[in-house]
Length: 273
Image (cartoon, rainbow, N blue to C red; front, side):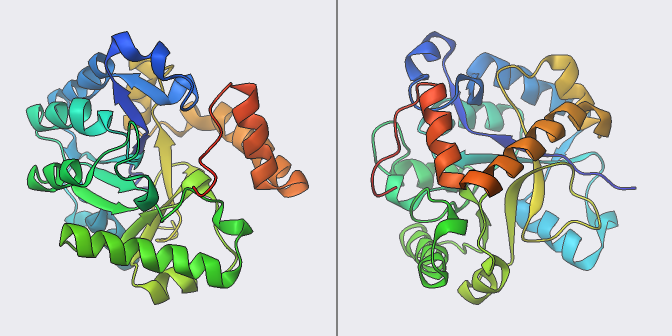
């Protein structure tokens, strides 16, 4: 069975700044640039080939995995933190790795987030920039009309400002609307990435492709097991994700998100984000 790892990163920063950034997100989601460099070195030295996100989506839709290179891996970044251009991009270039950056339109140019100029830098370096919606919202809690607007407007703005096709998206917080697939298709997307924990396989849904978060706590041994498609490495994390999903159903995703921010002393999201 073909199992392809899609790595999900959030922020890469200088080691000296890690503690200063903890108020923005869970500390485990901020990776030291030195650690990221060693991970990219591991990929290169062990013969892994980074994919274009669209190629993986097409392989799932057609079932033609044989057209992908040997030892395929997809590298993704969510949210659009500036450190991903300043720190991660030079490392990706050094080890000849491609990545897909999903950015939230309303956050472009905000404090600590990438600017339009930096997004163009990514594109010039051969990276992909795709949609993470207009606002960092729980899509499941929006009306059908509002969900459709988030999907369509984010795609249109990014295409207009960047001059490249935008037909893929990543779902903020992994949240999706009951009408998400037809709405995304109508808006012009061909596929999307979720926060579902696991490997992309022939049975994967092209709009809910699985990913595996790479965290500060991810050891080199665990990183190697993830890449080797050792599904047993995800057992504990999957159990925690199921418990989190159950809690979302009971009290609502926004409520759980607020509790999460308070528990980890993370700044509350911007009111319109």
